Amino acid sequence: MYDPKVLEVMREVCASCAPVPAALLAQAKTAKRYGKGMAYARQWLYAAFDLTMHGADAPEPMALWTRMEGATPLGHVHGTMFPAGFSHVAAAYGAGYYGYLWSEVVAADLRTAFGTDLLDPNVGGRYRGTILANGAQVLPQELVRRFLGRDGNSQAFYADLQR
Image (cartoon, rainbow, N blue to C red; front, top):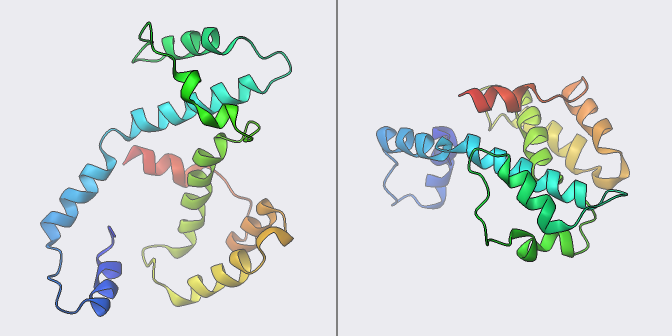
């Protein structure tokens, strides 16, 4: 929705809808990026907590959380009990919370194949045929390698963080 070309395609669905002014789109892009450093740092904290809780010598949850959150710029607020409501740890995730953040890293890398045209039909067809059509039949890192023609990496994600 932040790409003018994509918004133009949406106008085909609603021809009577007013186009989004360029200034409003620029403002939306700025708002989307606001606070992203803190948001990603928080996601990393949740993932690190989850992984530690599923380790061989998992400590008591509240003590671990107090220590980990206390080491962040926001610190820990005494009396809060985040682990009690973090259902990903209690439910059958099995140290999988990191997948939320990792999926963003992989998605940013995959988007590099599209360059500046996210609607490129050739790249989109290749994405469909290489990634989506194979699903769980092929290891994810192999699908990424086939689509990008190289091993996946975190460079696009980090570049996006710097914008």
